[in-house]
Image 1 (cartoon, rainbow, N blue to C red):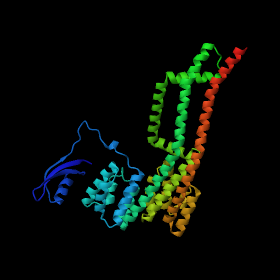
Image 2: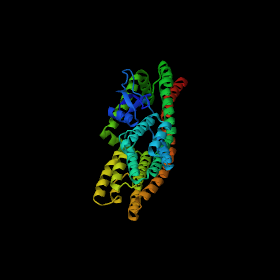
Image 3: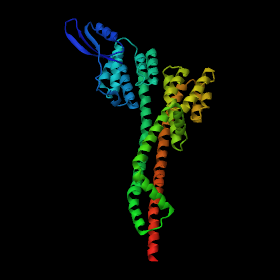
Image 4: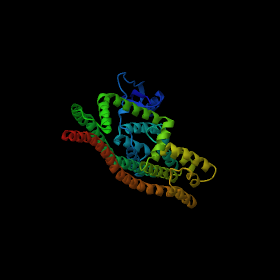
Length: 404
C-alpha cells in the first residue's frame, strides 16, 4: 500500500506531521479528522529512483515469529487488554522488522474500525490463511485469546518439526560437502602430479587410471564451463519446480525417496491432523476446515486427495472413508478419524493424533540420521579408494618392470 505524508494543525494550533500507510488518500483525511486535526498537506511519499526496495532484504517471517506474535497477543488479550491496545504493544516490541511493519498496518486499520481478521486477510503474504480463519472464528465466538494461544502452540510445533529435520540433515550434509571437496582435491591436484610422472616413465596405464586422468583434465581445463553448466542446471531445476507439473513431480518424489519419504509422510500427517483439529476445535465446520487445511499441508499429491475428501464430505460420507484414498496418510489416521466421528470428538482425536506423529517424526528423523551418515561415508570411501587404486596400480606395474 502507498505511504502518505501529512501535516496538520490541532485544535490548539499546534503543527503535527507524520506518515500513514493506507490504500487511499481519503483514509488519511478521515484519520486526521477523527483526531480533530485540520490537514494542511497530504501527499503520497514517492520512492527515489536510486533507491532499492528494502522489502526483499527484510528477514522473512518464520513459524517461530508467528508463534511469538500469537503467544504475545493471547497473553495481552487474556489479561484484559483491548485488541487495539494489544496491537499497539505488539507493534512496539515485535523483533522481526517485516512483521512489525504489518502489525503497524493492522493497528492503523483496526483503529479505523475494521475487523482484525478482515485486515489480516488483506495481508495473506504475511498472515497464513489458517491464522486468518482462526482469528475470524475467535472474533465471532469471543474466544480470541484461546484461539491465539492455540495458534501459538500450532506454530511452535511446526517450527520444532522443521528444526528437527534441518538439524538432522545438517551433519550428513556437512560430511558430504567435505568428502566432495576431498575428492575434487585428489582429482585436480594429486592425480595430475602422478600423471606427469607416469607419462615421463612411459608407463602403460590401466583403464581405471585413464578414466580418472581424463576426468582430472576435464575438471582442470573445463572447470569454469562445468561450474556454469551446474549453476544453469540448478536454475533450471528451480524454475521447473515452480511450475505446476514440476511441483507435482518433486512433491511425489519427496514421498518416494527411501527413508526421507517416510519422514515426509509423517510430517504431512502431523500437519494435516493438527491443522484440521485446531480449526474444528475453534468452531469451524468440517468442510470449511478441509478447504483451509488443503492449502496449509503444502503437497500437491495430498492436495489432489483432499479435493476427493471434500467431495466425499459433501456427499455425506464423512471424513474417515474418503481419507483411505489418500495413500500418503497411514491407516492409523483413518482409524482415529473414524473413532472421532463415532464419538463426536473428532477435533480432540485429531489433535492427539498430531501429537503422536510429532513424536514419530522425531524418531524417524533420528533413524534417518543414523542411516544417512554411514551411507555417505561408505559411498565417499569407495570413491576415494577408486582414486587411490587408480594411482597405486600403475606404480606397482612400474616397480615390477624395474625389477625385471
